[in-house]
Image 1 (spheres, rainbow, N blue to C red):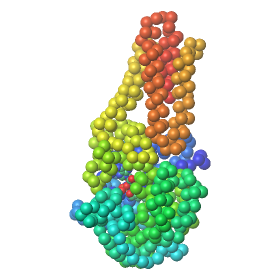
Image 2: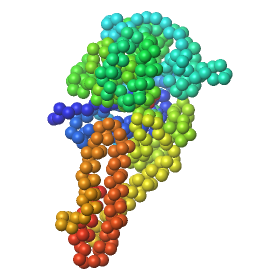
Image 3: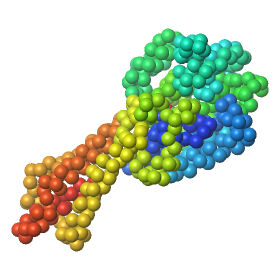
Image 4: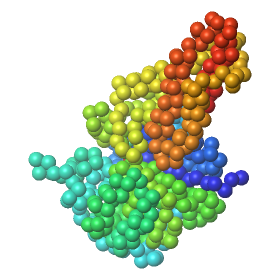
Length: 462
Ligand code: MSP
């Protein structure tokens, strides 16, 4: 048993539709990280799941003439199959409709209420049904038709006024500003902190509506049966209810606080503002880090999203090119902290040049030469005939681990792969320049040929 533990999460996805490669992106990154930490000897807990309540799901189910539960069951089924195809090795898949989650969220809500952090009021504002979020006047997009549109999905917003319960976020603004100062590692990349400060914290935090009236597809509010718990308390709590909080403590004691929450940039504000304040109110230690990654954009610069209808189905890509190609592309092409592009052209270019040419060809060349010159048996190396270039290559290969580790420890997947491919390119160049096919013609160069094969095969293997 190891006492090194690593707890990593993805957001829980809305099962309002089948997932696209934008969702795969974060899940693959988290899986990559989880695998890396396991290799490094950590006891890893990797959580993912689905965020299944809310008006949007209810409407979607109505349109599909089915019940919300049946509707989400179908998408969850497809999501689990997709994760299996993508070799996503999660520890637990949480559904916010799971009994244990619903009960534990009610406990959490009740605790917040009993501590005096929840009060009754009424909400007036512009609401996006699609994203299930209220927006302030300054956040909405105003168009020439005089109407207000959602800054995230660009759909028309509705004006709503209703009775609801509020969470006293406003009391914790100064505390959070200070927390960011004392824990600069809490929210990364650094620019996200500036966004949070500038857009929300410095102008003054507003209290958060945490219940909805007349929402049937939600967790019943434990203190008022006319209300349901509104999305964010329900959704964010998943990171602790999955571990048993507040009913069982074995997993919770072992893995909490979380090492890192991976989240897309548009939900950073929920994870870096509401979530730490909720935890502070509950006297629970904060996660060590929230990492806000960028979006996978279409090559026209638009975010890939269900509501825009411009999504790429990962299953089609896997059918055609295989899992590794998709995993590799997403981790190599896009710098995790900022937006990046997907297009069929970029995808093909990347997998052809890196996987087929650099990596695949290298193995094809050295394995066939090993067969031809040494009957497929790797020869011993002959130290005495090492050239400077060989020593340099050996050094690059042997320091690669450390470079990759330092990149992955700061979630730089692109850099880790870049470093690996630099070495692959070096090996290709080495084979090219050493020209084993010429060495093989000369009996006196047999030792050198053995070295070339040994070094290329070991470099490839490592
Ligand atoms: N249910 C909430 C999250 C609750 S977490 C306590 C939610 N769901 S979502 O399905 O809309 O989005 C889930 C995640 O997918 C977000 O982090 C979002 O950024 C990510 N992505 C959705 N489309 C994406 C891209 N095109 N590119 C990268 N990530 C994207 O928000």
